[in-house]
Each structure stands twice: as C-alpha cells, then as structure tokens.
Image 1 (tube, rainbow, N blue to C red):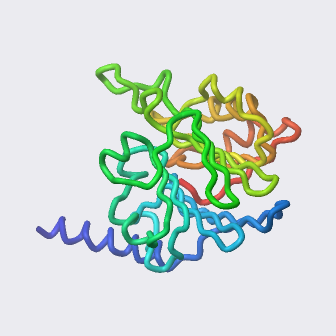
Image 2 (tube, helix red, strand yellow):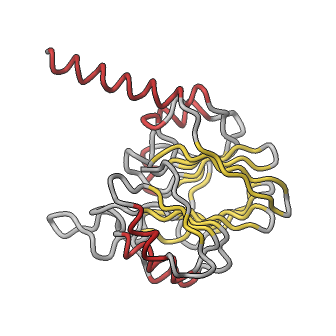
Length: 243
C-alpha cells in the first residue's frame, strides 16, 4: 500500500509540473498568416493558425488540457494509448470540431473524418494529406510489426505556403520519397517502436525538410542526430522538449 501511495504522489507531482509549465513554442510566418507550434511532449503537439487550434495526438499524460485552448481540428495518427486518448478528445472538442483519425482509431473512438493513406481533405484554410506510417524492421516477439503498414497515418498539413509533416510512429519507409517541399518535419526516434538516429537522418535525407524536429524520442540521445546531419546543408535540426 505504501509503495502504491508513493507512486501515486510521484505521478501527481509529475502531472502538476507538466500542467504548470510553459511549453516551448516556435512561430513561423506563412503566406496565409502566422503559424505557432507548441511542443507539448512525446508525439503530442498543438498548432495555431489564423485563430484556429489544431491538436495532434493530444494525450493527458503530457499536459493539463483544461489549461489549453479547445480544438478546431484534431489529428490522430494511430490507435495506441500514447496517441489516442478518448477522455482528452472529449475534453478539448467543441460542437464543430473536426476529428481526423484512422479506420482502426474510429473503431475505438468515433471521429468526424476517417482518412487512409493517400487521402487529402480540406478543413477551412488547412489542407491535410494522410501518408503512410509503419514499421519495416521493428517487430514484436511474434514477428508482427509494432505499426502495420496501412493502419497508421502521418499527416502533411499545408498552412498557406508552408507544409508541415508530422510522421506519426514510423520508420524511414520508401514512401517518404514522395514527400515534396516539406518546410517542417517531425520525425520519431526511439526503439523499438520507430527509428534510430541513423534511420531518422536517412529519412531526412530522403525528402530534405528545411527544419527537422525529432520527436517521440524518449531516452534517445538527440545529439547523435545532430552529429549525423551537421554537415548537411539545407536541413536545420531543432531540438525541443519532446521526449
């Protein structure tokens, strides 16, 4: 009982710290207005564009969502619990919120828009394309991939003339060669679920984003990625609190 109480207190303290903290934020100018990206943690992001709020994989373990603005658009990459959190979705939705998710996610939580790899939809001033996110090498003990092909989404969102790619849980898959003119990319970097720093660097070299944020990196040493790309022109690696 004492151990459980200590664990509960530690978890509460961690949550309190998270909810009270000021998240890092970067602001970009696009042809359609200002884009602000808030780095919440792990695979969780928030973007603001022309008065619209976009939450990506919002999960309550990484933020106190009672302190954050409600969503106009929600993007869910896949059904795992560190990306799909039903209670948080219910908390941040408004009556007109668009909730975009995969077919598998929709079996667990009903959204407004199911997107499969290759689909493109327009939400007001924001165009969203769903792209493949899956494992090739990294598998469970029974040989099944942690993220099967065709089941999860990455998203390419266009804000004015700026294209932002949020990869979801994926490896450096061949379809990344189809990504064009990406300004900002979020690539996951932790084993055994996604990529090593070398795989992440390879992915970046495939489609060459102007700015690369590693995310969902857990305890992975992000300096390894910086070293791998330090002599690469045209790709700026930015490290934020997204472990």
